Image (cartoon, rainbow, N blue to C red; front, side, top):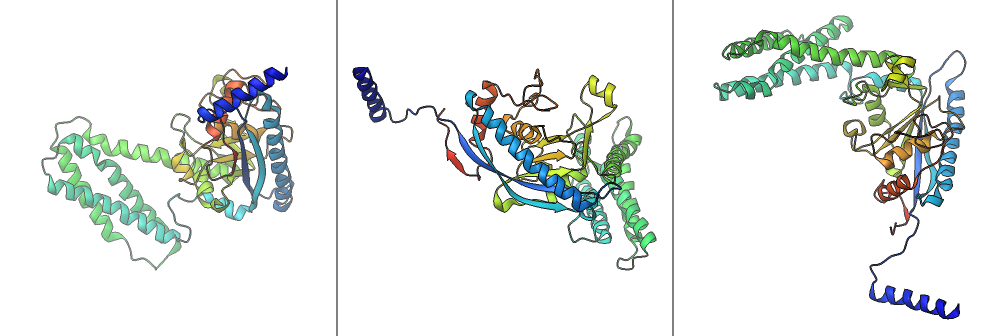
Amino acid sequence: MLIFSNLSIGFLMFCLIFFPEISFSATFEKDVCFNFYIVTKKSEYSTEINDYELQKKLALIQMSQAQKVFKNNQSRNCPIFNFSKGVIKHIVWDDAIKLSKPVDQKAEEKMSEYLYRKLNEATNELHMIINKLNEKPNIKYRYFMDLRPGKAIVKAEKALKNMNAYLDITKDKEFKNSAFLDMEIKNAKEIIKLKLNDYDKENNIDFLKNAEAKINDYEKIDNASAQTWANGELTLWNDIEAQNTSVELKNLLKTFRTTENKCLDVYVVPSAKSPSINVEEVEKNGRWTRRDGAAISSKNFPRTTAEKGDAILLSYHSRKTEFRLAHEFAHLLLDKVNAHLDKKETDLMHEFSRGGYYLDEIECDTMTENAATFFVNSKNNNQSSR
């Protein structure tokens, strides 16, 4: 045994001296902290302060549960995460209800200023198209349609309508009547329609109707998510194919961030929903299904996260016994569309995640690989050697 040990040590020293690039297996370890933003809404059953205190406790329990999950999966060489809390902030309902405002409305911008700015932007877009026609009177149909003239006209007409409606209601004298822009829009519309008549194409008459229908569809979606948010229910995304996140979610992640402490932001909301994704969900819940959590990766939702990093959503419906935070965190690290596929209730990545914590070796390998570059500003205790 002594001879074998000496030979083993000698071989190890030989490898280290002559093959320094060889490293031996070690578990990846990393510190990750969470910022928690808790949205509250007063109800007949509870106050906002009571809800905040309760959800704060539950959020910390979720963090503790996440620690337990990765500890229980170390035997399959899953990464070791040392979780800690960063800041915990209370978002009162008076601030939360404002999330339904337009995404591009600036924080200190009055509604009148915003509407007037949108009107000027829309008319400038029309001017750009008219200038392009003046520069290239023989522009080909395909290139002309690339300028989206129908959308530009409809946007300008709607912007003017919204501005005038606001002035009629508020009697705001800060801005002059926008009637002069009405004439500009009408003139631009006539020029564009005349140009369309030059092309021998079918359905030119309907191009404005088609553009208006598309814009109206988006307005209906935004109005619907605003109505549900008024009741405390956040629409995560509206179109399961396009993964188009709601105005409220975009504004939530845009408005409330603490980037300076390099923690992962977690938002806790009273309720959340998104479109049903399979026959079972449709039969059980109809078009919409309640979600207890969601992982919002900057890779999949670049516009929503606005280059400020990944985020996690949790709802009040997450139970103490669930590993919901761990589940959503694992989604970010696994970075795959079908992470729920063929999972059992004992698995962490089961779609309901109601107590299962098991991660298989393939998942552990993937998470170790992705954890090396995940949230690079957080502290790395040990680089993976695998």
